[in-house]
Image 1: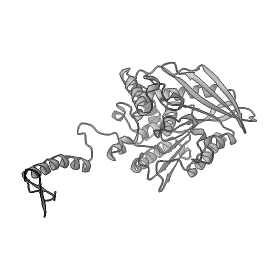
Image 2 (image 1 turned 90 degrees about the vertical axis):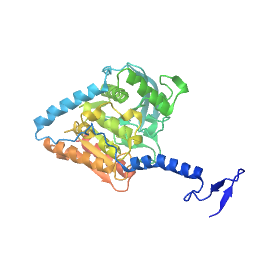
Image 3 (image 1 turned 120 degrees about the vertical axis):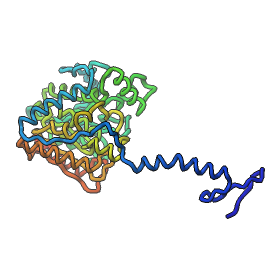
Image 4 (image 1 turned 120 degrees about the horizontal axis):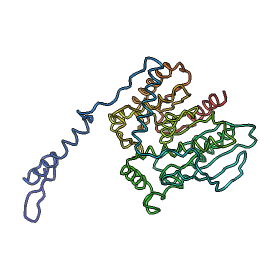
Length: 380
């Protein structure tokens, strides 16, 4: 092996696998010292010897589950912290009305009673006869902070022109709002227009933490106020409202439905995630700071929250290659929730589809499944 020399005529190794100079040997040992612990950590699952992850206990009777559901809801509200009650009748200001082909779009805003104006869109199909069913549509995250409720019009996604077109054609009144830090609320955080994106989202989480509030709880609270408004609309049959969403929108949909029985049907797409499996798979980075509710796993995992929707109709759509929702956790949740629907004597009201080869996405096939489900549950 050839060796080169420096100005001091010291031998410098040009083959790192066979260091010859003392300095080279010391440097290689130092790198090995740093690398070995990291390599060991990469191969060793995270273990906290003082903590046991929750395991879902299948109920044995309706009475047992009804009692447990009451306790789960009470615990969730406690975990949300010092969140002010949602306003039953938010004061809504309609900013603009626009007539489009087949429907009217109303742009509106309401103050959430705490810290933010909440912009939204309401889509009203033409020619309604009597009160119509409605869809509360929850947008995803995806790091796309400049977008939010306008996901309703996202082209070449679930269809050619966006979810709105299909929904209004089927006669649904549709409502969507921007979540904290998204859409029109981007740059509207505690630090103003100079801070947007993930930094703004983190600021919202931090300031709520200081106030003893869960940031996620505040997001769900906004969605509940949007539901409150939807129920007051004269065009809407408040007994036939569905919550629909993908990814963060999936979570917003099923958490709201778990806490509020006014959601008649729920479509949860590409985020039926069991937190224990996220930990085992090393995928905590798959979700933003909004997702993490302090002390949640001291009590239960997401299957318990989803099961609170029973016996109301619930559709779960998941891809088996979704890195944000490890498939072992998807299957665990689907079986657990299925058992609760069985106990509640409503097995046909829970349906799940597991799509082979599908990643973290809302495919056209999933969208068609969504439309069929809504038609079956909102037009009985």
